Amino acid sequence: MEIIDILQLLAAGHQQLTIIDYFYNALAGAIGALTAYIAANEGEVFLPRYDAEQHSVELGALGRVLVGAGAGIIVGYSGFVPFAAGIIAPAILPFFLDKLMERFGREKQ
Image (cartoon, rainbow, N blue to C red; front, side):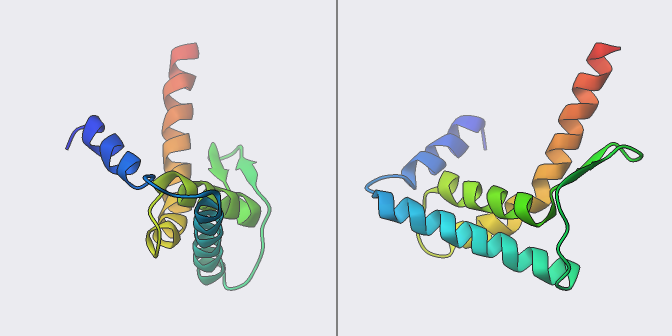
């Protein structure tokens, strides 16, 4: 599967969606992210931070909810898809951020 195929699938999910549909998608994504966060941290709430020792980004509760809401909007489909995107996106975003920081950190040196 190429990048253009992925972009076509994402674009297909946005056909005939209204503003209220995007609001519901953002809400479903945020709820999915919050659900996964509470399940993973047993109800404890942490703030976003950068761990200098391990050079990694930790999103915290607020960061996860915002990333989940953004993922719900980006996928565009209705139903359970934004909820699932809200669960998955905050889990993989720190990995991609770490890889980007690694790559650009090497280019500076």
